[in-house]
Image (cartoon, rainbow, N blue to C red):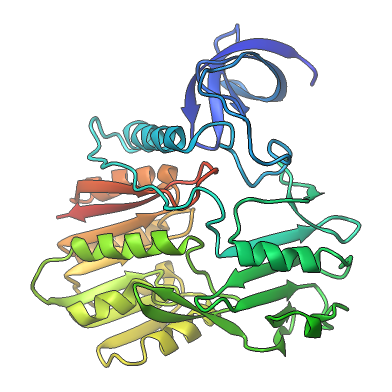
Length: 409
């Protein structure tokens, strides 16, 4: 496809794109552009009702457009918003969350609070994952999500990770699929090498001041140090193993925990259900406020970490399995349900089971406004009322939007 079009862009949309209209009335979505700009685009995908395009030239730039910090911006798929300042990023995300809840969720006036900004707009990530180029050099997925481009600089990881990355960058690593780095609370770093072979790749790890884990088809093998790091949130330590998920922006994880606690009643709760509980980030702070806390998690390494992180509590139990497996057979009637699903949102079987439990209060932690809006519509249809939504900017320079929603019966 090689058609070129001159387009006036009118609004920002979820996914890091700006939208305009082609001459035939179809919507066209353009990455790395801004609402209010006139742009020359080349169509890359055409559907009956819309099209996608590559930005070829900004004919009339928006006054809000700024110079990106990173030379890889527009080639690397990691950042989407470096061409606007941070205050505008927050405004754009707030309006997109509102639009998604209106259009998909069917809400006329969604009760959305102000976006909670990240203390750092750059160098905020405690974890970074690299893919490898065909030559074995570290890089990130390109904007097409199919190829990998070599990276000379990145402004999102915390500084100690950048320092270590530069040491690793010196040697090709052709046997690897992926490589990730995670920074712990005391400055310790966990290096995870992922490959399709059980034999660890040839990398001189003894010279690196880090713990190293190799992950292959047969499982994980510790090559140096520990198989985990200790993350700290509000003064509380959490063991996080190589294969376990943890929020990548630690100060914002603290802000989210504080917010969840602020939504709880003053009196002690009876039963609390923490679905997709992970390593226990929210459970650890909910457990002292309830008589009985039940966690549900499917990832084995996260379940192991949860058991360690919540070991001090006698009122905590953990079910290992997916939400859609566990919830329908769980005979409990909780006072509060907390859900923190992946981007796909709640599976229908899990959501139906939640509705049957009839909990007075539901807290929904979302990392995708589209699936949040879809599930909100279902929850409202099932008898819940959306009381408030608070967005949190865990991922500056990207289109991702985290939020915490409070539902009540």
